Image (cartoon, rainbow, N blue to C red; front, side, top):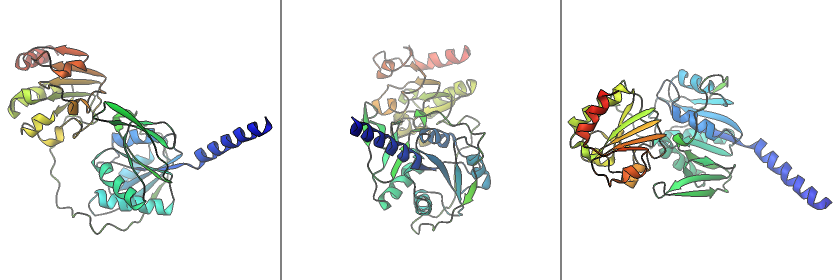
Length: 328
């Protein structure tokens, strides 16, 4: 009996010690002036993984300051660079931070930057990254979707350092005020293979960002052409929402790739998702089925989108959308 109690107590002490020694480095996604919402969600995901250090690569001092204001953050490392903020340079900054102070976990949002930098750093550290995590069950056990979200895999990672990308929509956002973490400069050697920055071309819009909007109005192949997306833009503007699209609409050239929602596009989970002229292919559903409320408009009553929608309207979209907008 004494032996059993002693063994159990030892396991408890070891578990407590491991939690105390855990530490996490979060790679911040930012727009050059402040960390974005996906970084706040990643902080929440890491809340049970020890002290949190946020790594900001590039950007102004305002970005580092915004990271230091986030509740739950213990320290901020600012790696200044005039080079291109892409996977190569960010991976080098991750390795420099980890070399200076070894971490048990390295997390990043499952964004273009995270997907491009975490695997590079993992390869150098001889670790296996766990990607698109939607639940952190313990320090070494994570849940991630498979087969376009039709199955969930519980992954146990035994690497000394766990490298993880987090699906932002699966976690609440940490408060972006109330913190007071110190900011330290981090020096790193830029990757010689990093692309050279030439110019950036992006469309400016007064609408909310698609990834974090509370309302999203998306169109599919049923829109027939790009000009007809103007009616969705008008509807979205009335609801202060963002405009999205299915892969079929993007591949047809109706709208740019940055509006694509789905497995190979952006994953969204707004309070309201309006799917217009979208059949509901599994690849699209994997990117929006976690939305709080889903409204589908399609003239095909057998469309798969109706199986996941909370409200469905079987009607020609060219009649339904103008009527919908008029009633708002």
